[in-house]
Length: 304
Image (cartoon, rainbow, N blue to C red; front, side, top):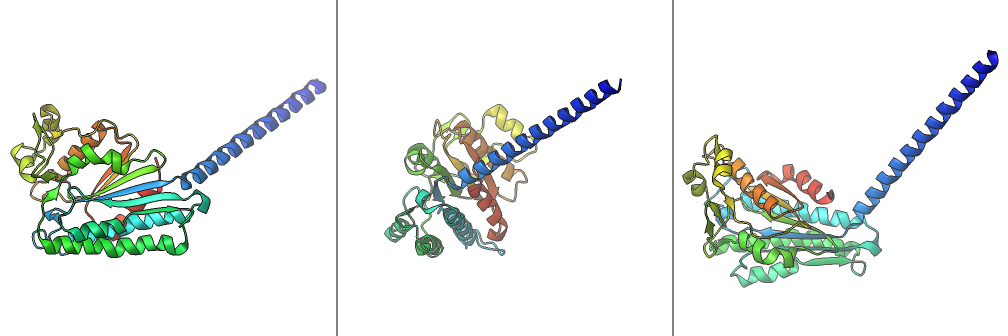
């Protein structure tokens, strides 16, 4: 009897030992997988595009804000974007660096000086120019030159609108998507889309969105979502497949007279991006740059 008990105890000990070894092996594999993922994510090459809406939303006379003017918020957001870009580069091995950042407008500004400045905002950093001073130059240039762009646009006082819809139809694939990089498009806008030469309407779907449209379509009431779904309100699809593009929309500034305005705007954009198969997107209302800094950097630093 004692002999059998010894055998049973021995088998139990062996069993526990095997389970312990197995668990340790699984844990080690899990840790190894996590480490590999982290290394790989830091080595991804970035292609960051910034689309600026230079419509009258930036006019400090028409849309004054005592906390901080909206054009100043834009500049703060741009600073966070450029910092996220350069921080990413600094965390990479030099031989792996091959990253891009650029600014776009649609339509192109009529002021030639703005167009000249925008050329300075095109950076392609690789192993041949990834010096400390070269990387720092990105932040310095973005801070100084974008401020000049907004200053010129406000002084011109000739706000022709932003043709964001047409940008998605004609330009986004050529300008913002590079199959060898992680593609991120940051759009700085108040959420309303309008350009005089691009006014398309197909049923209740449009290429534009204005506050008066939301009111006239009865989307300023509690049943706004039900009405949007039943009557098919939204943006007309401008692109078939943006599955290799991540989009961050910043600065959405809904009309305060409608308590549902912000939700309606986000629904328009969300449905639009979903219909165009955008890989990942976030739509954020305007906030102080100090509060938005983490939001922006988290989106850029963390791939899907």
